[in-house]
Length: 453
Image (cartoon, rainbow, N blue to C red; front, side, top):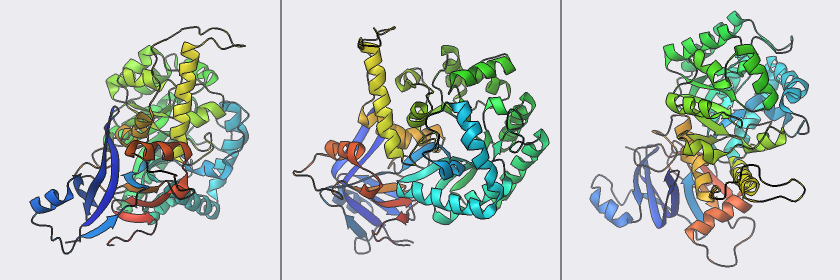
């Protein structure tokens, strides 16, 4: 039996959207990559667990300015677009796709190029604390498998999808319906041969606009047959929504629902302009939304009111949406989500000089708190991806997916900080350099803290 490792010091995580839990002098005990104990009374826990020999326990003591928290979940990221990150931020979505994204993604038939970029994006996301990512790849099967193998090699938990699109795409980057369906089936089969509990397939129609009704339905059938995760986009851009309604003669959510693609294992990115009826449908189906504040702003798509979705009973996680988003860091997405919430509050409650009065004043609108945003970045994301039984917080029995954070890396605070202040300082001033260690299922994938292999 593997040795027990106990992390002692400031421990924090969430239990729900409104329930933040912390232990100032707490502990998390780990064995075989699983959490076997958590709380604020280590001695009592140890005495109650006779199977744990105190002499063999390896303890890691966190410093005054360190804390242990769950790993981040990126619910929506386009791995191939890492090659173009930071480009095209001045154009709207559909122009951006045609000018930058489709030409870039078409390059991934070159497997050497694919390996270079995919190796880099997995390294970068792990460095930034992403222990669980839901990746879009490209239409190309071979290079999508390269991404999967790279996630396995580097030890990242991931959902990976071969992108499907058979219409409204450039001639150099489009499939037939048959190619898309067979490619998806082959991808599922080949991914399962990797035999990794960390990396799973997810059905990935790019978005309704680039898929025919027939293709969407066939993908829905595959997902149902194999009980798979599903990911796509919804209601991101007003022009996009207009085209979808014209093609499918229904709402955006309705187009997916008719194909059987709205399930409890489905995540839809954006949801900026969802109608009330669509939100009700998502709640009924158990489908989640991944909030992508950076790309929604960068591509001029709009401001997503996360509170509206959550109040309606829809589960929400966070996504970087690289490269519509300009950072692979969920920490940055977290701070952008807070900014968007503050902006919505301003628009709801203030008469802005130069822009006029608020059209629909909501004087009682509540901004996201930083603790609620932290939930979206951790347990909320895991729940959206229906992996919260495995990861997302420090509940006993879950895998140890965790970050060690040191807020004194760049500049030591001039005074001691409370638990809440440690988290707040990290959110508003931190970056990947403050994340000194990253663990996935107990395996160290970044950092120097010793632990049993």
